[in-house]
Structure formats: C-alpha cells, structure tokens
Length: 461
Image (cartoon, rainbow, N blue to C red):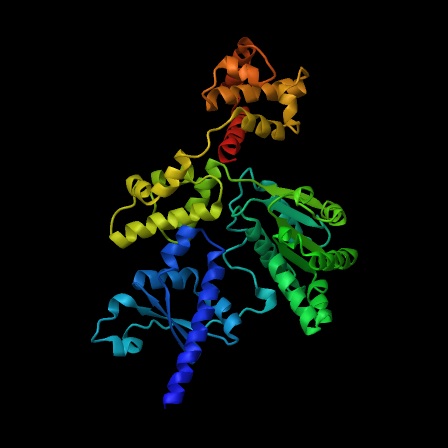
C-alpha cells in the first residue's frame, strides 16, 4: 500500500512538471496580463484515470477556461503526457475543511470527452477567414491568403506574410488551413512553427529517422510554416528547409511562410532563400488603424457573448495601438474585473484596470521629426534623405509638405525649427506647406483618410 502511494506521488510530481511546461507554452500565445489573470491561478491537483484535475478560484474561472481554452489544454497536455486526457475542475471557493474529502464528488465539473486532433485537423478553430477582421493595413495579406486557400499551388506561390507580433499572421495561416481542407478535403495540409521544424529535424538526426522527417514535410500539398526568422543561425536546419522548399515548389505544391520582417531584412538569411521567398508574393500586415481596432473588439465581445459599451470599446482601442493579442487581452481584462467585482463596465473602470498600459503610453518617447520623415517617405517609396534634399519635383515636394504638416501637428517644434529639419528651409515654406495640406485634408475625404493612416503609423512606430 505504501509503495502504491509513493508511486502515485512520484507520478503526480512528474505530471505537475508537465503541467508547468504546458502553462509556459500557453503563455507564449497570449498577452501577459491575460495569462496572469486566467491561467496563473490554475493549480495542478492530480492526474488519475486520464483525468487532469485543476484547481480554479471560482466557477467563473472554470467556465471561462472551459469555453475558451479547454480543448487547447487537453491537446497540449495529452501530447506531453503521451495519453489522451480530459479536464475536470475543482472549485477553490467550495473547498471548506469539512468538504475537502468529498471534493471529487461535489466540486468537479466533468467535461465532454475531446478527441486528440489528427495532423490534418491541427488548425485552431478560432482562426478562420470568417472571424479575421480586415482593415486597410491587412487587406492585401488577407486577400492573398484567401486566394492561396482557394487555389493552392497555383496562385501566389510562395506566399510570404510578414508583420509584428500579434497582428494576425498565425491567424491567416490557420485560416488557410481551414479553408483549404474545406474545399479540398483530400489534400494534405501541414502547419508547423519553425521551432518545431528545427526540433523535429534535430530529433530525426539523433534517432536516424531523417527519411520520416523528410516525408512529413516534403509530402504535403500545402506547407504552412510560422516565424521563419527563427531558422537563422541554425545552419543545418536552414539547409534542410531550403531543400524542403525546392522539393515542394518544384512539384507545384503550396508554401506559405510568415516572419516578423520582410525577407531581405532577416539578418544572415541565405541569399538563395531570400530570392525564393520573393519568387511569389510578399505581403505585410501593419498595426490596425483605430476603426479596425474597434471592429476587432466588437467582434471579440460578440464571440464571447459580452456586452461592452461602445465608449469603453473606443477607449480601449485608443489605448492599445500595436498588438491585436494585447488589444483583445485588455478587453477580457476589463470585463473580468467588472464581472468579478459585480460592477458595471465603464470608462472609469477601464482606466483603473488598464492604468499600467496608459502610464506606459504617457511616458513613451515623444514623436520626432525624423520619425515622421521616415514614415512618410516609406508611404511614398522614397529615401528619407530626400525629405531634406534640394529636390523640388512633385514626387518629392508633395510628400515633404505632408511631413511638414504632420511635424507641425505632432511635435512642439516651431515652423523655423521644422524648416531647419527639412534641409534648412525657411519658416514661410513650412507655413505654406501646412496651409496647403490642411486645405486638402478638409476638402478631400480620401486624402484625409490617407493622412490619418500615416498618423496612426507614426504614433504606433
């Protein structure tokens, strides 16, 4: 009896370590505040008879985890434990000393058994084209991804999507996977992160199963690989991916790659890989503008069946400008705060909950003329140095006037100082530029929208 008790104790210690590993993996996929709010309080209790029991602070927590992350947890933990598990929840607030012995009977919430996903189904159900909010900064990338899903191997091959963290690159990869399998259920689609690709490659060398590895990644009709930049510095893995790319491309099978930067800006990436990525279409995703951020929050609230006043949604959208994960995390954080305290959701409550984010924004670096020049130059495909040059052609003079107008509105610099920053021009030139652009903004709604787009990018850079 003592031996059996000791064996169970050791097994639970091992499984608790696996739970910590699972938690860490989940942490990489969401904003820190969301993880600390929803996952840090979850405690491992036991794993018996393929049932993973987690302790939750209250039923509100268990319901939220069950609705939003239960399937993900079961899949991740099952993979690590080597057995199919299902979740049960022990509610902490129900655990009085008198009832601790009957916790399994009284506070465990059984869940419906879930099957472990097969490789062809490894696409997150939350990430589809239907729930991807398209804005001006993501329209081209979304359209290219949609076209690829409808015509894999025929249109835009390879497709290279780049952008900052949390802007929707992974969402689009999963959306491609979903739609491709819906239209062509017979074809094989594989999604993999570059880190997993590297780890599996290393394991295949160690285990002498390289042929199996190559069959896995050179065999699919569509390969979706996330965060390719992590291949850099892994010489043999990069070499293996190069030949994997060639094998797929030569047989007209689809390749979609994501990165945090365009191919030519990935440091130390082999020139031959850069050229191959540029054979097809390179599409970027930038931080969403205000209207898109509001739409994203409304969709999130709708999906979660939450009522959030419009003024609160707008307030959150104004505070979080660069990262969709952080944006959605802030919404959940505000809603959870109000729910746990039983108060109404209001701007004052949102300010209280998000005060750390608001404070960070208030102490962020001031906007500089140099930053304005760089952003405007990029939009007009100019070298930033041309902003201060003597060139007077319309192709340079007009963008320069826009940059002067924005500098006047976004910085504390005088017209004389602005003129000096634009190649030693006098203050009357700056005043003329500001008047001209101001008039065009007030009379042309399309131009006004264009200026707002540049404005948003300057603020979020």
